[in-house]
Image (tube, rainbow, N blue to C red):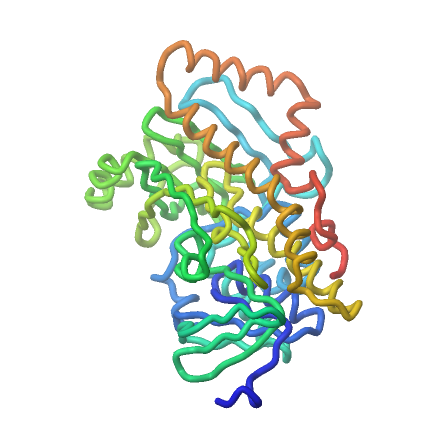
Length: 407
């Protein structure tokens, strides 16, 4: 394709996963031209074997998804979280977060990743200014002084004033454009599966911290719960090699008996847990969004909520600049994004990494200190409400869509 006939866009998004599609829906929903480049076939992204995980969507993230028109596509498959109980193993000392202490809305929602992708694609199909190129890979990416030019392996090319890398924590394009990223392997594997149980969960999420790793059960639609279990790599290999009956027995031991008989629904998945932190969030006419900027431990269920705050910030900056006739990819725009998102990102890196390390230590005095800390939080309502509002994504310098306002 000649340069004269190149497609002209306002934003190019590299990576059509959860984060990339959310950004594309937000910007295209405001009427601007967006190109998404995704290496996998779209049908694969919503196929059952592709991803067995579920995602915790905090209240602030739910407001964002509603503001950009995506939430109606997934609302029926979202299970509200009304209560969260955190304890060490089966200790009687716990912190109980009740949504009624901070308002009448749920603390968050649990949605299967496949349902989220279907919702994002459903919204995308209704946006005439959004183009998704898939399956195709990037052949060249030129970061010029006034625009970005992308050449795809199928020979098509396009330009835009800004490109957003949303490929995830193992982004190859990030390295190609010269942005280094530090990686720390936790030596843990995240095991994920779905459990069907005899009794209703009533919207209760439970996180228990065992010496061999944290174990969370998250309420799903119907009498089902998603299990997220982090184990040391060697132990995870042993557990994953068990037959279904033995595996379910291991789950049941940690799950508890309050929901009656348990059954394994569907396959199990295992994912290596790695902390990734890019040296910077921006490059020449380029922003890193979500896990491409920093990928955190899943221990607090905040990964996609953090990514959506990136998405909301990029969308707000870009749309506001375009409405004023200004360049959304100039240094001022990039500096604003980096400054806006740096503290929030680094804070959650520190919190999730610290919690994982703290609860992985089974030294007796430290275990006593942890239990004392949980007891203190439970007995100081203002502190507990602060933690709840923070987990709900309602604290900090939030983009307006995170407050439920239109872009």
